[in-house]
Image (tube, rainbow, N blue to C red; front, top):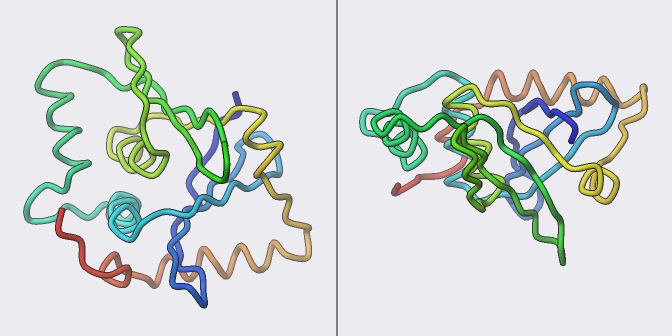
Amino acid sequence: MNQLDVVGVRVELPNNQPIVLLREVDGDRYLPIWIGPGEATAIAFAQQGLAPARPLTHDLLKNVLEAIGQELTAVRITDLRDGVFYAELVFASGIEVSARPSDAIALALRVGTPIYSSDGVLDDAGIIIPDEQEDEVERFREFLDQISPEDFGSSNQ
């Protein structure tokens, strides 16, 4: 398993499809995952440290885990089949629960849990951004600093 950091979310044009971009901590690969607008908002909120007036679904799950004393120890992006990514929530008790990567990432950001990807997923979907494109990544980070979660549309969660 390879640890990943969340670079951020953005909207892919022209389809207006949000993506979350992850980067290998000890490597040079990036992992783009297309996600829904609700999850994009949830991830952007968590990255910006924003707390909504009422808990979003991922905030609720974090609160439930705290209330029942369950610690989320890892999020693993485990598979890519037919263009669909799969993930698992791994708890200190040893329990593993299947999850969509976007939901798992949003929860991981809220509780400070590390995110990992299997070698196979990174081999299949990871991309290497050449040095000359690092400026593009920096512009992407600057874009993330300027964008607000509301830019991804409304979320009725």
